[in-house]
Image 1 (tube, rainbow, N blue to C red):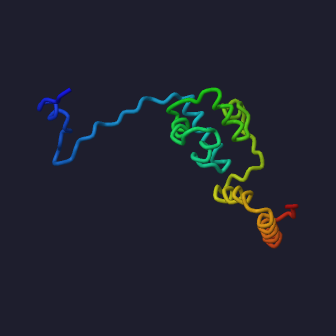
Image 2: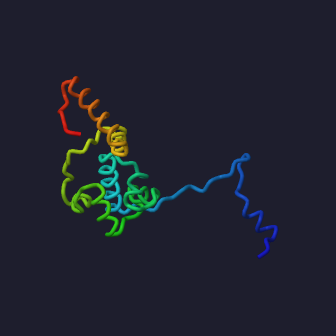
Length: 150
C-alpha cells in the first residue's frame, strides 16, 4: 500500500498555534455493578495492606487487569472472583457485597507496617526471633504489648 500526498496531509493532526488538538476523550458509562464490585475489591485489598501489584501477583493477573476491575471497566470471571476471595480471606458473598465484610484482625491502618511484618518471615530464624523480641520489649515498655512466643 502506498500513501498519496493527500492521505499524508489528512493524517497530520490539525494544528492550532503549533499545538496538536486532541479529540475529547469519551468514556462509555460504567456498569454500576462492576463499578461497585471494583470499589469493594479495592477497599478490601487496601485494608489487607496489598498494593495492586502485590495482589495481582497473588492471583496470577496483570496489575493493569486489577486496575480495570477496580475502576469498573470490566467484571472478573467466576474463577477470579473465587481467587480474589481466597487471597483476601473473605467470602465470595462479602466480596460481591451480599454480606458485610467482617473485620478479621488484620492491621489495616498502615500498609508499610504490614509490608515490613511480611518481610520478617523471610529472615533467618535467629534474626527473626531477635527482631520479634525487640518488638515485644518495645511494646511492653510502651505499655501496650503482649508477650508472645516467637
